[in-house]
Every structure is written in structure tokens, then in C-alpha cells.
Image (cartoon, rainbow, N blue to C red):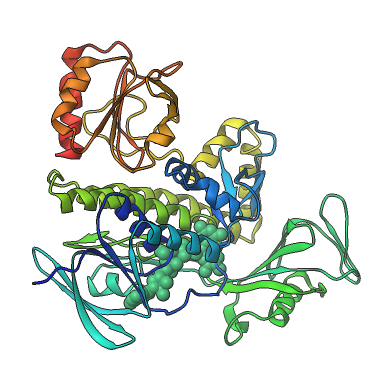
Length: 506
Ligand SMILES: Cc1cc2nc3c(=O)[nH]c(=O)nc-3n(C[C@H](O)[C@H](O)[C@H](O)COP(=O)(O)OP(=O)(O)OC[C@H]3O[C@@H](n4cnc5c(N)ncnc54)[C@H](O)[C@@H]3O)c2cc1C
């Protein structure tokens, strides 16, 4: 059997392309098969939000992504949660950041990065089937020259919500499709509509339309300014009866606004229009033998702004575990921790996005009371911060067997590091996606333990002001696998480090 790729990736969406780049960083050969010859022009995500921006910084690509965006990564001042607006504007360091980077641009950047790193992306190649055994997966595909087969060690379905790979692997995708129809438009508004300083609208024949959400008997109207002159408008209607054929048109959006608000809002030029229904679904298993699923193929959440964060993190989590399997150092069970960790992370995202459904759906006084109570609670800093970091995914802590330091399981703190070679940072150390034992207290005992793993784990000694630990073992996805408490004795720290290194790096 001729194995042509280490990992075959179904789909050149953001998650497939991110995975291809991460695998190349580790020297693995991915092959991406994408059914469409050209990148889709259908507008999807407006940008990236949440902790994935920090991960991109830890890979050294955030600046490039910011340069291609419509504005730098900035703290989100207000953020919709259900149809309640969380107001972070009074917090000195808001827990949630966003980057206005339309999905097509994001995909272009990720594809360029994957190509620069040497990944092969075949466009116009659709995966139609596969078989797997103990050593490999043989994929059936149809390309411009007809049907063919290609064999890889693993297959990852990054092929979206209707994933063929997931279906063929027999992985169930239980959940709900909500009946409400959402219509979204980025449009200019004609001069007949005047705007007040606070962003509210005065509309002839309709009167005052407030920025934010307006709830009526027929549904929900949402409005805000995306940039000066460009309005973001959304309607949510209960009855799906009036769905038009094909894509959303300006006329259909106008009719929907009229049904919800009871009057006509004049609309100018559309920049982008889309219509969608929310789903809440999560794959029962993220792995079936040599076949795995990631991104929308693994989860669909019933709220905006979270899909990319979750999907790109799946890719980062999976890449180094596949590398361990392919390079032969993976300890037993390493690949299964992909399901363990990312299904858990997905379930947390599902929890808060379904809570958003409950907040926005109810039309009775009890639901109004729930929204009022919720808004009251999130005017306090502590719950506001907590929800912000839940939305960002920044509070995620994976279980780390045998590691009880408060930093274990969480994302590594970005410390400034002083070394013999100069000043660097934890973020910079993570650019090549290699695991690192970071010795912050000149601990020869711990460096000695790590010698047995020196082919896999980079060993670095540095000084950091206010060091949070004597040493950190950081995985390639920047999560802390283990940490030595300050002054922890060699008797306890050395065997604990050995256990952590064995657990994660064989
Ligand atoms: C209107 C809209 C707005 C959104 N807004 C946001 C937002 O603001 N923030 C956010 O985070 N998320 C948002 N999302 C969600 C976000 O777009 C998805 O989470 C994201 O695209 C998932 O990426 P993916 O790579 O997993 O899947 P996809 O982007 O769906 O990519 C899957 C790829 O696989 C290919 N493919 C499918 N089947 C095959 C096959 N058999 N063989 C080969 N290739 C195949 C497809 O052609 C596609 O290119 C939005 C989605 C929509 C629809």
C-alpha cells in the first residue's frame, strides 16, 4: 500500500486550513481535499472573537491577521448574549477581544500560511467515501480528472456542518434545529433616515428605532453600526413561512423588518445579506479509529461569534496529538484526549449558547423577567468578567492528571522571559508549536528529568519577574500540562514532572 499523505483533511474551510498549517509546523504531511474549485464568496463570519486571537499571537501570526483586518484586535465594548447586550466598556481590561476579519479573508490568510509551510491543497476534489484499517485510511475522491483513491494514515473531517466524513464514519450528530429564521444584512441607510449621537435612528413614518434589540409580538429586530455609514441589521421571526428561494434579497429583508417593526425602514445599498437558522448539535464522538472530526463537522452552536473560536482550537488541539501518533512517541490514549478535551470544550460552548437561546426566545412576561434579572446581574463586574471569559473560551481548563498547580490545564501565561540570549516571551517560545519545559528558577533537577524527552520537548531556562511557578511544562497548544510550585522540593517535583512528561510525550 502506498501512503501518500500522513493526514488527509476533508475541506479547506478555516478549520481544515488551520489544521494543515499546524501539522506542517510539526513536519507532518497533510493533504487537503476541497470539493469547490474556488473559495466560496458567500459571506459568513464577520470576524474572529475570543481566545483564539491569543493562540494566533502565540503562533506569531496575529499581526499579519490584524494587518489584513478591518481594524486591530480590540476589546469588545458591547457583545450580544441572547438578545441582551453585555457592556464591557467600563472594564479596564475586558475579557473578550474581537477582530473584524471577514471569513473569506481569514481563509485566504490561513491558506497562504498552510501553503508557505508546504501543505498541499487540492481544490475541486470531493471526498465521496473511505475505508479504514489498523494502519491507514483509503479515501475515494472525485477530482477534475475523475474518480481516484488516495491513502493516508489519518483522515480528519473538517467538512462543515453537513460533514460527509462524519456521516460515513457513523458518528451521530444529535441536537436541535430551531425554527426561528434569522435574516442578517449589512446595508447603508438613505439620507431620509437620520441618526442621533447615540446611534438611534429617526425613521419617517416609523419614528424612533433604538440601537440594540427591539422585541415585538412578531419577533426581534436588532440594529447597530458596524462602521460609520454601514448598519448591521438583523431580524428573527418565529414563523419560517416566508423564506424566499435562494439567497436573501434586500426586498425580503425589508419585508421582514416591516413584519417585525410594523413599519418600513428604508434601506440603501446591501454589502452583505444572509439568512440562517440556528442549530445546536454536537458529534457524539470526535474519533472513530483513524477518522476524526473537527470544527462545524463536530459542533454547531445556536449563537453567532463562537464557531470559529471553537473550530480553530479543535485544529490546534488535534495537530500535535496526530503528530505524536505519526512520529511514534504518542503515549497510549493521547489521541483519545482529543475527544475528551474538545468535546468537553464544545459542551461548555453549547451550554452558554443554549442559555442564549433561552434568553432570546421567550415572549412572555416570565421571559422578560429572566432577561431583566440577567441584565441586573451582569452589571456587576465579577459575573460580567466570568461570562466574558466563558464566551472567549479563556476559562477553559483541561483535566491534567497528577498536576494540581492552579495553572495546570489552563492557557499558559505570557511571561516576559530574560535569558542568556536576550529577552523573549512565552508567546514567542510557542511559535514553532513544540512542547516546552520552561525552567524559571534554575532547577537543574527538573532539567535533568526532562533530558530523556529532549528530542521532543524543548528545555529552556529563563528568569521572569513575579514568576508564577518554578517551572512550567507547556504543551504545543499552549496549555500548561504541569507546573512546579515556587520552592517545591525535588522529591515531589521531579517525579511529578516525569509523570507529566510520560503522560503527554510518551
Ligand atoms: C451567516 C453565518 C455567519 C456566521 N458568523 C460567524 C461569526 O461571526 N463568528 C464565528 O465564529 N462563526 C460564524 N459563523 C460560523 C462559521 O462560519 C463556521 O463555524 C466556520 O465556517 C466553520 O469552519 P469549518 O472549516 O469547520 O467548516 P466550513 O467553513 O463549513 O468548511 C467546510 C469545507 O469543507 C468542504 N467540503 C464539504 N464536504 C466536502 C467533501 N465531501 N469533500 C471535500 N470538501 C468538502 C466545503 O466545501 C467547505 O469548504 C457563521 C456562519 C454563518 C453561516
